[in-house]
Amino acid sequence: MNRKEANNHIGKKIRVVDPLLGSYIGELIDVVAEPRKPWRGKVTITAIEQYPVQNLTDMKDQALTYPPFADGKTYEIPGSKIEPVGDIELELNYNESLINALLNEINHFQAEKNKLARVLNDLQVELRKVDPAYEISNQDELDYQYYTVVKEDDYIYIVDENNNQVPLDDCPFDFQIRVKGRWITVHYSEDLVFLDQKQNTHYVSEGSKIRLNKDQFDPYHIFINELEKPALDSLNNGIQKFRMSHDHCVTCHNTLLNQYLASEEEKKFIGVNFISYQKGSETLLVQHHYERDINEDGDDITYDRFEFTNDQGKRLLMTYTTEKTK
Image (cartoon, rainbow, N blue to C red):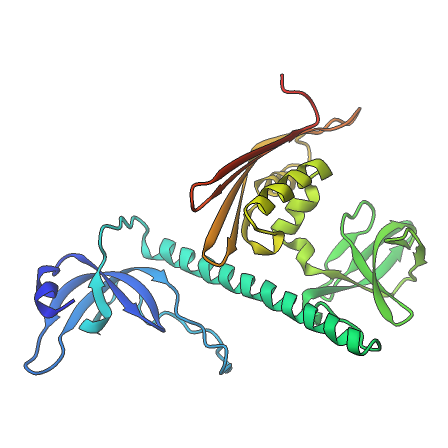
C-alpha cells in the first residue's frame, strides 16, 4: 500500500503483517508522511490473526516469542507492513482472536511433534537393524507420568508425586512396569496383579514404580479407544479414503468425554464430536454424531455416524449402530 492508498484507508480496518512477528488487524488512525522518508501509519490494534514465529534455534530462558502489539493500543508502524484487509468479516474481539491464534500454534507444533516422533522412531528402527543391542525408546521420559503403588487393606491405588490418587480397580488405562530391566505394557487385573499383552501375569509389590503414557489423557486417544471396533473401522476407512491417518489429527473436540465426566448417573448420551485432520495443505473435518444408551441389564446400545468433509468439497458418510434404525 502506498501513502496515497493509505490516506484513503484512514478510519478503516487494515492488516499489519510482519514475517516474524505475526499478522494483526487494526484501524488506521493517521498517516505520517515526512519528506524523503518512508511513510508510517498510526494503527490501533483490534485483533490478532497469526501468532509470532517461534525461534527454535536459539532457545533462551524465555522460549516464547510474544505478540509485540496489545489490544487497543496505538502504534506507529512502517507503511511497508500495512496492507488492506480485503473483504474479510472479522467479528472476533482481541481476546477471542488471540485464543484462535494460540490454538493454531498449538495445533501446528503438535503436528510437528508427531512428525518428529515418527522420524525418531524410524531412525531408531534403522539403528536397531545395524546394532541389535540398541534399545529403542519411542517416548521421551517427559511423555510419562510416574506413580507409586499403594495398598491399604483391600484398597489398591497409585499416587503421583503431587499425592494425587488413582484407584486401580476398573482403571481403563494401559500402564508400564519394569520387567528384567525394560518397560512392558500391562493393564491392571486385581490384587496387585497386572496382565501383559499376551495375558501373562506380573505381580507388582507395594511401593513399586509404574508409569502411564500421558497420551492416554489426550481427548483424541480417549475418543478412538471409546469406539467399538466396527465404529473404529468405519472411522479408519473414512480417513484413509482421504489419504489421512490418526497421526494427522490436529484437534479433537470430545463432547462425549465431557458428558461422561459431567454425570455419573446419566445413562443416555447424545451429541456431536468435531475432529480435524491436517496433511500438508489438505484439511479434513469429521463430524461424529453419536448416541449411547447404557443398559445395566443387557448390552449397551451405540450409534455412530461419521460425516467426512475435506477442503475440496468431497464428502463421505459412514454409520455404525448396534441396533436397527427404528
